[in-house]
Image (cartoon, rainbow, N blue to C red):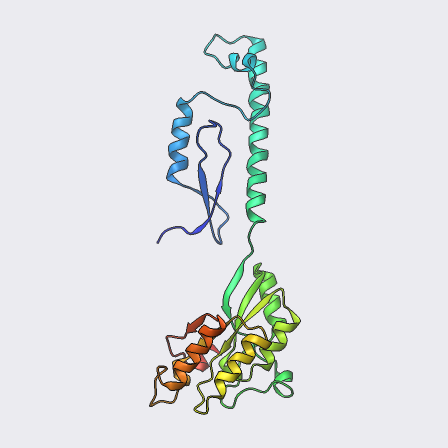
Length: 252
């Protein structure tokens, strides 16, 4: 399995080629690419072009292969130390800029009612009662601990087609969450109107199709399914299809 992460430029001492390093997600150490190693070997043979303004003609002369004296040794040491400091500062600035240029976003998660909410305004769908905690306060705690800035919330099976809980979360935290609703394949076509309402009025961004929610004798390609697909396309809403059947007790 290859290394996946963010690529960013490192300062080049040669001035002729900028190597890159990859920072794997979730790791603290840096893995250098082959281009970096190749550039490092060529740097040893190439004439040094300093980033420092101190790199004048006279300072370059100090690095020529001439017998060292006490004065030139001190100057070389000072110049080397100055250049190293500048390079280190440049690398630190580059790394900081790279880390501040992106946010960690969870591409799919669920949120459901707390026991108190389930007993009142946001009841669970019969037979889909959650056994683990999954309320928004707990979600925010976990996100903060993991350094996650935002997430796509998908309507959970625990509340089936009642989107009121997720909608309330999206409205309370509009800059942190976006929503993916759940397609309702009801025979009377009411799910098509619900889909339009959720996308247009409640500002959900996508819709999930779960084939396990269709009647057992029918497929998602039935008349209702095709109408839901067509409506999603009309509204410009991406469609996500659940491709496996999960045992509720194992997950929830």
